[in-house]
Image (tube, rainbow, N blue to C red; front, side):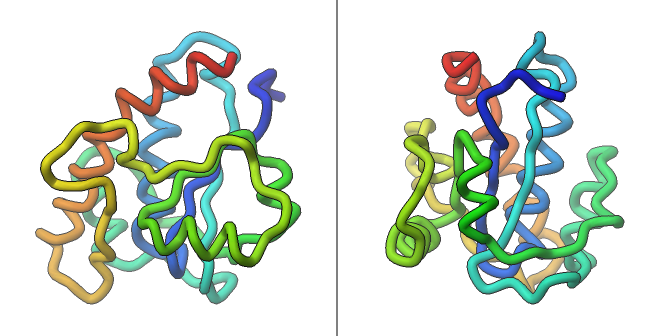
Length: 159
């Protein structure tokens, strides 16, 4: 059990591409952190997910190329209880954040875009690669990888 103040939740649309990739990437990075951050629970969900769907094939392949297994992922829809268990929520786009603030009355204090802590000319949103080729998923993955170090710096302030 973690002493981190709650789950770290990633949110996208269907929970089959971006948020599960982000979840696995952060879990991988947290292995190198000191406790309690190293045992923080990371989860993902979608604002319009069909529960039980597998991750998209290209999301699985994009993570496999960097040694991370996403094959066992099953989608889930974001819920009030999941948000209440979360200390921090990272959404992929401003639209996802807006959906959360519109549809849920109780949100964590910390609700950010995944790339919000970056000062990047590419912008803070992570576009949906669904239906695109593997290169688009790899670009999506790399965009997330770029966001991990500043996220870790922020998370350390919460421990």
